[in-house]
Image (tube, rainbow, N blue to C red; front, side, top):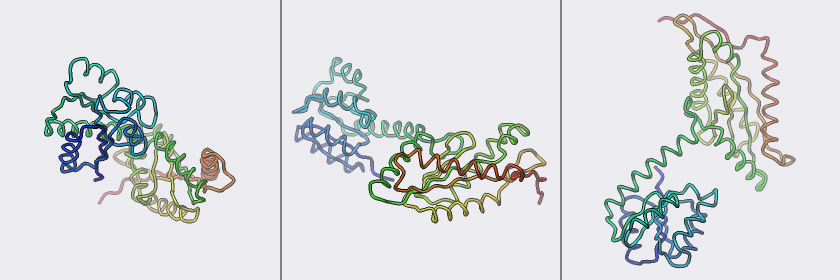
Length: 300
C-alpha cells in the first residue's frame, strides 16, 4: 500500500522533530514546512493526505494558510489538523469554522494523535473511494472520466504521446430490463464490468459512463494496441451469458467505437465524440442481427 503523506507545518523545532520521528516510525511519508508561505507552496505541490498546521506558525499564520487552502480547488479537500499551545474553546471554534478536521493542544499526546490521524485517514479514503467509484460495478465513475480524459489528452498534446479511447455500449440492454426486470439488467451490467476488468490491462482506466455505456481510456497506447485489447474483451465476453430467470440465460454483445488522439485535435471532447460516433455506427450495423440471444440454462 502506498504510504500516506503528511505535511508538518510548524516552526517549533522540538515539536517538528518529535512529530517527524514518531510519524515516520508509524509508516507515514513526512514533509516539513517551517513557515506559512512554505506550507502553502508545499501543499499545492504535493497534495498531502493530511496537514498538521500550527495556528501561530511564522510568516503566514495558520488561519490565513487554511483560508487560502479553502479558496483553491486543488487544495480545499486536504484535511487539516490545527496544532495550538492551548486549544481553548475559541481556538476550536475558529478551527472548525475554517473546516479543520480537529484542533489539538500542545504538548502533543503522540499515540492519541496517531489514532486520530488513522481514523481520519480511513474516513477520507472511504469518502474518496465512494466519490470516484460506480457503486454497481466497482469501476471508475463519470467524475474520473472527466478528470482522466483531460489529463491524458493534455499529456498527448504536450508530449506527442499516443492515447486511445473506446466507448462501449451493451447491445439489447433495454430488452433485458423490459422482459426480465431491472435485477437482470443489473446482473448484465455487472458481468460486463467484470469482463472488462479481466480483459484490459491494469494501466487502462475502466469507467462506467452511465447506464449501459462504458468507456476505456488507454494511456500511452496507439489504435493498434488498443484494438488488440478490445478484441480480447470481445472474445472473453462471447464466453459469458447472464441468467435472466431459472430457465433462461442471455448471451451478451457490445457495440464499440475506438478513437486515437491525433495532433489536429484541440479539445478532449473531440476524441470522445469520434469514438462515440463509431460506436453508434457499429450499433446500427448490429440492429437487425439479434446480437443478444436467449438460450436455455444448461444443467450439468
